[in-house]
Every structure is written in C-alpha cells, then in structure tokens.
Length: 79
Image 1 (spheres, rainbow, N blue to C red):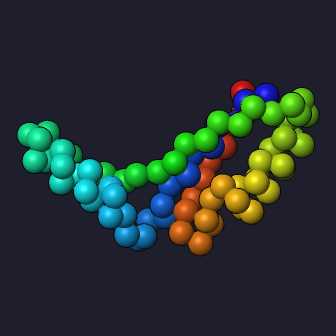
Image 2 (cartoon, rainbow, N blue to C red):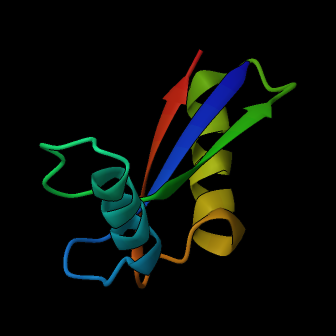
C-alpha cells in the first residue's frame, strides 16, 4: 500500500521560503503570482494490507514525527 502525505504550514504561520519564491518568480518576470507557500511531500510504501490499520499507523507517524502539528497541517492519501 502506498501512502502519500502532504505537509503544509497552517494559515497564519509565517512562510519565509514561500515569500522568497514569490519574490523570485516576480523578479524572473512571472507576474500574477499573488502568494506562494512551501510544503513537504512524503511517500511511504507500506506492507500493511488493512486500510484502516494503515491509516491509523500513518496518523500516528504524522503526529509523532512527520509533521509538527503545532504549525503544520497534513493530509494523507492511500493507494
């Protein structure tokens, strides 16, 4: 089973890397980008075949290590 995890900063959390990307795009002539936010993407290849059990384990992984839940949100897709 493949787990795809997207981690993004929560709204209201400053994103200096996103701001730098936004300014760089503008300086390169890419107009019309109002805002840029950066994030992280993870893929986990799991041996688990039980979807519910896999989701429970991934949730625990995200809360304990993958995401800083104080300032980040995460979403999980299972394939």
